[in-house]
Image (cartoon, rainbow, N blue to C red; front, top):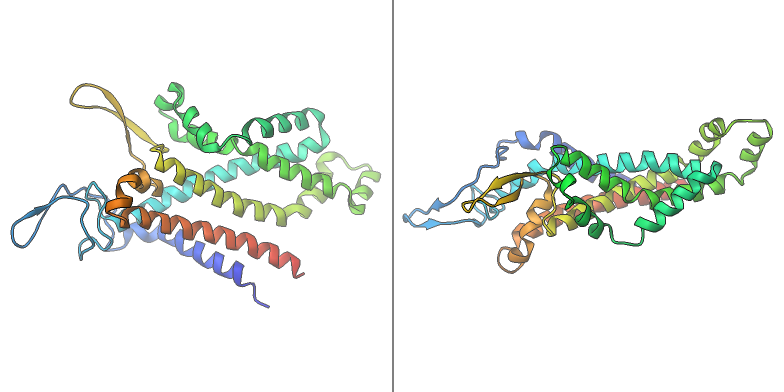
Length: 293
């Protein structure tokens, strides 16, 4: 029987990845994201953004007069880069810490503290507080710090899951046989731990990608973005100006748009939802594939 969940998920995600790679070069996409302060109608009257859907703006525009479809397409690459970078860092540290916690009491203690401190407070609240610290706010390497903080906050939770997997595998006869032969913890991990948890790790990765995308979408609603610049306004006050092109940017005006220009937030929400769905289907498909063996 064909694994419809896995096939559908991979197909959707592949289309999104292709959009990230080739989308900005499509003829109907404005890769420069040009801002239009106004448009002139045929009768000579002026209209200001957001502009309604038209031949020039297939989905309409945002409040800066940027073509909404182009904004979504161009933002795909940055969005995927963020979530894949976050999950890669998170998984590498979680695997080392989770498996290491089985062999080391010190690592187990660190994992427990990490899990207890960060897993019982909503990540969005912690991120808002952390990125507001002057060191992170004004650092020229803010995007790197942002990704790193976003990854580390969830390491305790994921590491705890991996620790439980390692503990379960350690109770299997084949692992005990390896212990009897005198294998070192490194060899036990390489020969028995990792090969027997690769399916679960694949599912965890798929789920973490969806969780991370959903989290940065929440940050977009509260106006927290990975990359900002600082500019002086007319009164000389320094203010942070977002220069990120990721999908959550479109959600920064959701409180205004949801009552007047619904296409703006709904377009981003739809694309985020479809991407999260693809990760969910891939995770579900992997589990189904394993269960059918």
